[in-house]
Length: 103
Image (cartoon, rainbow, N blue to C red; front, top):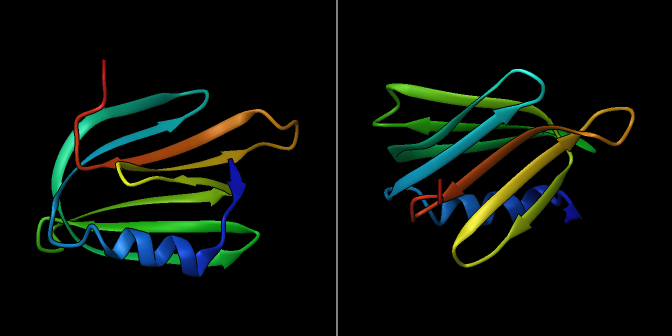
């Protein structure tokens, strides 16, 4: 994982606009949402060092907002974003892919 570079992340998220995406969202401790699908309408990346990512879905009828993201991994197949707490434990993740995630 590398620290988030907002411009690089935004460009790669924008490549997915107009496509059906699969989303995995997790907050620790607490809960998760896996393999939700939607048409990605728009994306926003805000912040410095700790970022907020907004995914606007289904013609802007839905939104996913995840804050305190610090690290990313971008591949041709998926974008993985993670945030760690003050003890360097995984606190949240947001994964976006054009393919379903394995269960």
